[in-house]
Image 1 (tube, rainbow, N blue to C red):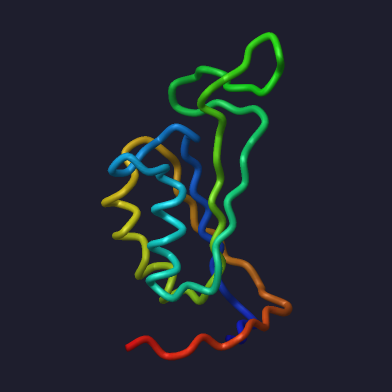
Image 2: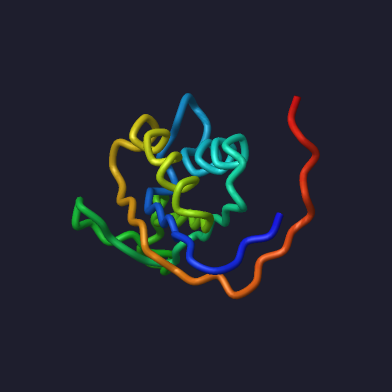
Amino acid sequence: MKLQGPALRLTIFVGETDRWHHKPLFTEIVHRAHQAGLAGATVLRGIEGYGASQHVHTTRILSLSDDLPVVIVVVDEETRIRGFLPTLDELIGDGLVIVEPVEVIRYVGRDRPAAG
């Protein structure tokens, strides 16, 4: 797969303990992105943050949190990202989803065999 030029970056902020059918929500999002054929997804674990609840979650020793922020980042063509957004509506209760225009300078990956 080759991706170059204008694209969208999909960034999803959820909590580490958020679940989808007893699995981590971030795992389900990555698996759904893979099934949708998106170029790739990366999950990043935050060390500190807060969201709509206004409760600060941190890795600091004196206030260990069991619900650190998790960010999933996906970059692909606009039509593919926009086509994936309804999946997120199904999966995400509490969280933040943003879409930003980006320019891909270089992304070359191995072509996957056709499904089927």
